[in-house]
Image (cartoon, rainbow over all chains, first blue to last red; front, side, top):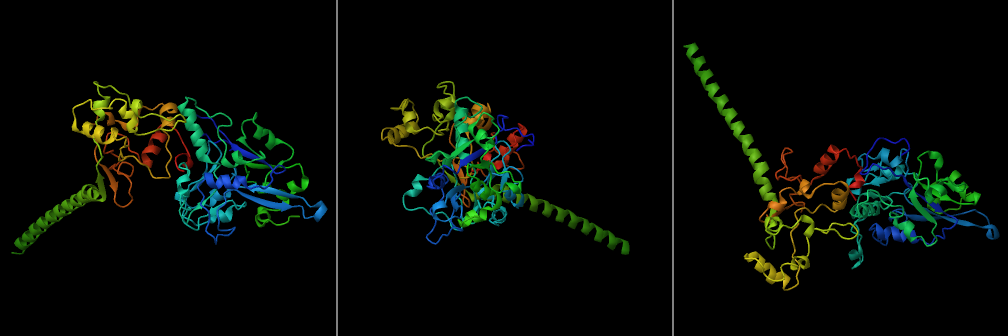
Amino acid sequence: MTNGNQVKSLTGKKHNFGMVIDVDRCTGCGACMIACAVENNVPPGPVDATDRTGITLMRVYKADNGMDFPDNESVFFPVSCQQCEHHPPCVSVCPQNAVEVDPATGIVGQIPVRCLGCRYCMAACPYHARYFNWWDPVWPEGMERSLNPDVSLRMRGVVEKCNFCFHRLQAAREKAAAEGRDEIKEGEYIPACVESCPTSAMTFGDLLDEGSEVYRLAQSNGSFRILERLGTGPKIYYFSEREWVRNIAEKDPASALKRGATTD
Amino acid sequence: MNTTDAINRNASKGTDDVRGKTIFFFGIVGMLFLGWIIFPFFIYAPVAQPVQFSHSTHAGDNVGLKCVDCHSYDKDGRFLGIPGTSKCAGCHSHTIGVSDEEKKFVDEYILRHKEIRWVVYSSQPENVYFSHATHVKVGKLDCETCHFGHEFTDKLRPARFSRISGYSIDVSGSTLLDIPSTPSTGMRMDDCAGCHNKRGHKESCIDCHK
């Protein structure tokens, strides 16, 4: 959202929410995946669901440096929708206008009820961050009572993806409004994955706010983005002090991460 | 001779024309009547409220309650909607009026600590997000802007739900040729978008859809 189109949000202030994930601190525990699924009412998949047909809006991939034992090092990449800010491929291919970039927040929003299930966006997304609902959601007995009322359920036949827990932003805005504030305060809105990370590897905030931690980290030396050369401007930054880790994102596309394969 | 025939023919053609146009006109009117009045009458099933309630009595001069006295917000800003019976019991711990409905309400609900299962007119589909706090406190809208006339109602009309979709007629198109059938603004997506456009708020889909 750099070349700001003149759009007035409710309060006129623009944000550009983004995230920095320090992969040196990520232990691959998967807490973010669980927190994400619970927060967003993602049902447990049927027993025959595979990596390809199950739904993991946030997914941790493993990669290593390809060396043998004493020198072997591995790294974990939590990958969700990368919230591309510049011509997101999923937006331009969608025949339904079911996905668009919210000008006020920079969040790429997907409206599952509008989706017709053609899965063109899944083919277009270089990060494999979009998932198709192959089944209607079914919860184990009693678990449906713990569903999140702020997130609607998705039916069979539509595509879904991470939207930075937009409902949490709505809740924060509503709380701010009730207290008579026009704007939310920093830290009032963070996605579930960031909140759940036990090693605080994830930092979330407004990339336009130059005083924020996320801005500092995104501008720092070790920060990089996956497939930056495609020019889609992902708003999820990764951070590592190891050069070989940074090179994974440079030379090897996300498909290698998807296979969990050794990259070199 | 030939001329007379021709005149007769023309005359009967004229009558046919008039008759055809009349039938066509009444046909159209009949179809519109069927489609706009009769059909909705059948397709929406009325559901009566379990207890009657008069907004005009409570908001009128005698009692003088304001909207927010009963319809309040939670501490995190969520709108609480219709109050529970505990709030009503603040005044109605025993019968204080003369109406039969109040007596029924006190006897059957308050004294038994039971909640009323109100039939909600405005339940939106599951994928719709709406925040009262944002509209009222940041947007500075009065309750009457959207709920005009509600405080003057003496009776709760039966809610009408579509037999096909299950949605209330209040959220799914009771407006006709953009003329709202009630004095209030409608609660359809077009109504929301219309008001936002008028006020220059251009939002994206996820602002209202979840």
